[in-house]
Length: 272
Image (tube, rainbow, N blue to C red; front, side, top):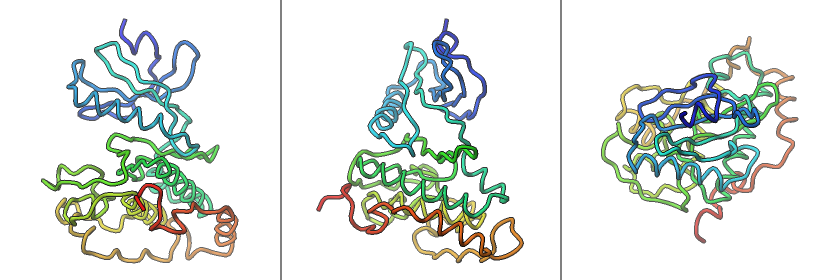
């Protein structure tokens, strides 16, 4: 039998891309809910195998309540599978599309995401693809987890090469100026904070700061344009945030923010 059929009972296909597919399943030996990320080819290239293996090693190196938990990396020499926890989360992109969520819930998501990014940086991991599809949230438990470390870097900084806007690493609508390769600046931990800013802009306003569908226009916008301040209306609400929303904001913000958020130019991920 195949690795999948022998060890896992597959329930749902969550993603079906050109190279990878993502499945919701249960491990037969202990009925554990898991998410399987696997290469689609039965004979994948060494490069694709190495990328999936690096993703597994990065996940295993970071222990954080805000980072998806690693359960294993398996192969039968035909299929290569990264096994991750399934905590019942859905992408916060769904939260953005459903504006009935209260401000307090969005603030919880925002603060948890900041803490998750801080935990990554404390291990010198730069995610490089923070966006609403790579952040999962369980509406019932309030848990939040960062996923998809396929292009993450375990380095203090790197110098990207620019070839073509259609082949950049990362999700173009959320990519930082330095990650485009057109600023002659190294990519360090601050690239995640830029992508965090775009993500939070969309979470609270319901739309991205730059909405062009042209790749080169998006690259130009990230480098040279200032985003229009979001409107003062709460998406899906009747008007500006009311007293109850402000009270929720104060309550959520009681906890201490990560050190690197209070002092964004200091980080152990950078020398000096």
